[in-house]
Structure formats: structure tokens, C-alpha cells
Image (cartoon, rainbow, N blue to C red):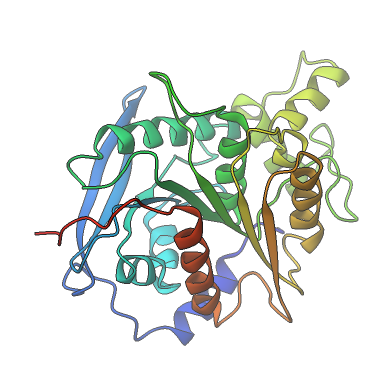
Length: 305
């Protein structure tokens, strides 16, 4: 499957096998498996990485999802990419949010779980010494798709249900399931790709009873590149030039949609990069620097105790 990215992350794990990832890492204190919401008896979890050095007063919500699954292995992938180490070194508090998996939830449901998580983070901003209005959102692959979907559909800041963020970073995200590279996806037809799209778009993958127009509209509703508005926050997209799982075209479509709405956007193409690539930590550092410019805090907060 084009979204079965485990092999790429396995290679990354081999390359970065010496990276420290446990709670003893001096760069952060880790709060594991905090429950940020309960959905029909299913607890939704977040790990919080609090910098042990000086906090910059800003937070990052990192959507942990690979192939639209949020099992602990996907969290380890983000550790191996040094996401938490790099961001905490720069003073960010990182909220590694797990929105559930496609085996139980649709893309729209997972997106709503992320909005719930963002609201939870904002409600906890005093506890974690971050400014609620200085919140960034990021993800990779399926997590990048969900982060992008939330960013283009959450509306402006303000109000009791505010799930807005100030900036979004996404690594190699699917953004358009109607115009997907050279492949024509159709949730009505058989095949593993279409089956996954069907489960993303429809509860339990049940499509019977929907008209052709309703099916197309549902696919449209989970395609971020087709939902961009002028209120969408600034974006950074990073994509491998040789990505065989999610075509570079997917980020290019998102860039074009953002530019049409005059939303600030930057695309970084990693020459020869796949899905992902062994030196992706270098691009994680670039993303952290980009968030530095987007989430400008009025002042640095005191050292985290």
C-alpha cells in the first residue's frame, strides 16, 4: 500500500538506533498516556514532552498516525525521527496526540478527536506554561493528512470551541483523494487502496445506500487541498522528491490551493528522499526553526521546574 510506510520507518530506526528516547532524556520530562478524551468508552491518549531546559512558552501538537493507525509503534517512529528531542531542545512543549485508528474511526472522526485534543491542550496551557495562541500543529504521512484536514476546517480563533492553531507543518501528507498522482481512487471499486479510502470516508467502510454524488462529496470532505480557505494558518510542507508512497504532487496540490487563498506556504523538497529518508532529523530541525518564526512569543517563560 502507498500508505504502508513501516518499511521506511524501519530503515530510519536502524540509522538512528542510538537516539535516546526514554523519560531519562535530559532534554525533556515525559508524561505518558494521559487521557485527553473518552469516545464511546475508548480513551484517547497523549504523551506530553516538557522541556527541562528553558521553555519558550510555545506548544506543538504532534499528530501521531501512520497509515491512519495510532498504535505505540507510530509513537516510536516519531521518537526515532528525533521530533521530541529537537523541539524540546528549542524550548517547545510537545503534545504527541493519538487520535485513534481507521479500524475504529473515519478520517472525519479522527479529525474531530484532534480538535478535541487541541482544545484540551489550550485548557491545560497554564499547567504547561504555554500560550494558547502560540500553538503549532504537525504530523507526518497520515498524521500530516489529519493535521492538514484539521487546519483547513477548524475556523478562526476565538470562542468556546476554538480548535485553531497558529501554524501547521506536515511531512509528505496525502491531501487530495480525488486527484491522487496518476492513480484514480474510487471507494466503490475493489482493491486495497480503495478499501482504505472507503474506511477513511465511511463508518466501518459501509458505502451501500449512498449515491455517487454523496460518495464524491464525502471523499471531497477528507481532502484538505479542496477545503482551504483564507482563514487557514501558514503551512510548511516537506516532501521527498522520490516518494513512492505519497506522490510529491500531493504537497504541490496543497501549495497551489494555499497560494490561491493567499495563505503563506513553503514547500521543501528533499532531493532523493523517500517516505521517509534516513536523515529526516535534519528536516525536523528545519521545521522547528520555521515554527520559531511563526509562533513568535512575546516573552520567554521562566525555566521549567
